Image 1: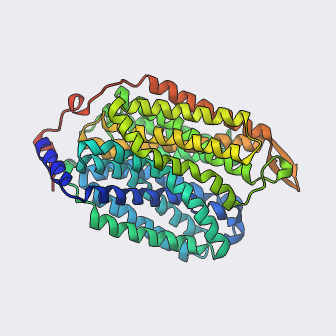
Image 2 (image 1 turned 120 degrees about the horizontal axis):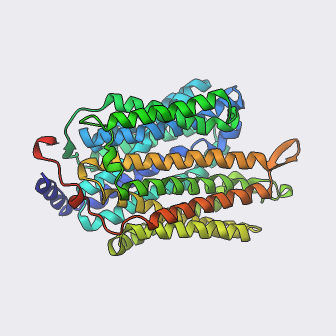
Image 3 (image 1 turned 180 degrees about the horizontal axis):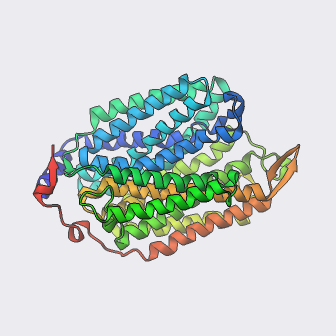
Length: 486
């Protein structure tokens, strides 16, 4: 079986399509990450646009985050079993359907449903990374992974000014029609360019495990994301959080006792994989903290200590972080081949620590915020490139989709936690301005300290990841009767 997969990679390496495959998967990743900043320009106006309360319209963002976190590991497992390209195409269909529903909906319910379906497309990034391992020549895999990983930041960075420009000059529904059109284009490109998956895992899909994980995660993530508004000690938050944790414990017990689990927790518990996933939480926290804090600083009125920039101008200052991630991807691949991906994770954490430390000392000029965001881009570019490389060096090829999906889930836990924690900080340290409470300088400083502390945790964890680990040696290929092709 391994010889057959190797022959498949060698045959593909002789064709001039490898660059096209990488390009198409990168475009799919950009489309996926764009969904997270799609409604940012209209977020404050949603209560008026949808004739709903602010608490209800918050679900337009929350639904996307929840759907992304829950669907990504499930999509990864489905990709391992039924073909990664096939599941990528299914996710793109969900993106198009969700966009059309939101575009046609006159009220909040349809927009929330549409945004949830849009969130499911997040799974194309870990699936795309797994496809690269299946079809690319070994010498090209690391650089390609770095490029696809970079799209997680680039899509949002480029998408924010585009969304802001569209909402300033046209109706907000155009945002969803644009995302529908983007989904159709990417669907056609994937169908045309990306080869059919030939390496699949046999067995039955674990429906009970998928349901248990989804319910447990839904409870935990809802408690984290809504804790600020509902109250951290409220019965609803406690019931959701503690109930979700209890369900996840029962889910883990169940997964360890069945023959075809949704996620092989024994593989996930191995030291390189476990530590990489823990570092992913910290990196996700550090990234999202920057996404929340820097734009607010740039947009706040000058009288309150901000810079008074428009949304478009602020997004242009933040945008170089995403561009830096893209520019670093070839360099990241070469570094990983020479020194291993652990070094990338260490360098990424150091760059994030430097970014937040620099901002604590220098944040009185717009160009200083620009420099800090470039450092953020370096940190996330290296860090996000390293994590899937570390995962795929530590798991068997039959587990790449599910394992990358699980890693994406841990990043989502980090971003969700950052949204809650930074939200508390920005709501606690406030000052009144024209009848509205706005964050103070202390709120931003505490946020920077928290972002830097998360990066420091990622650094310490990265130092404990083993330098060398080979998935082929530690996880031999599955026997022929347990694998299927076609």
